Amino acid sequence: MGLSERFNVRPGNYHEVELSPETYDLAIVGNVTHIETPEGNTALFTKMYKTLKTNGEIVIFDIFPGQEEGELSQSLYALGLALRTEKGQVYSCEQLQEFLSQAGFTGFKFSPIKVPPYTMGMLLAKKGK
Image (tube, rainbow, N blue to C red; front, side, top):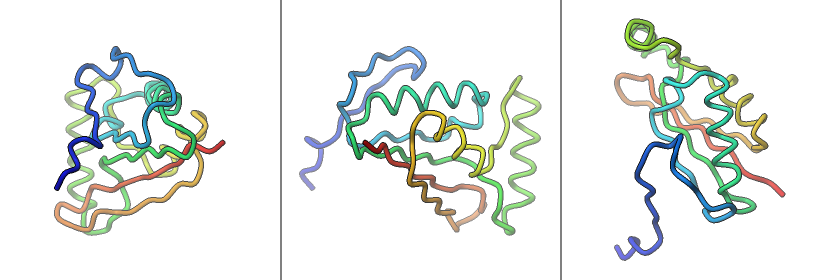
């Protein structure tokens, strides 16, 4: 589709990789917020905020509570996190919005992903001026 020139993937540990300031239009954070502490999420979002251009966006794909069909799956996932991590937890959309706000993001939009196991969602936020 001729889109490969429009994407830049940065491999590596997201805690350690160096990112240039105000370089990117979009940051995608996939399936990691649940393994971070609140402070870790705020630090990650702050790092993403600094690397985004004005009006850039961050998209978070992760486990979110709230879909009735996925309550059992989400509860089992949260139990698994408690058993295999020291501080992992499933954060609500409101909690992640608070972490994003602390980093400077605004304009939140949440969309549940309505497919089995009904646990995933997408949270979008914008870097303003």
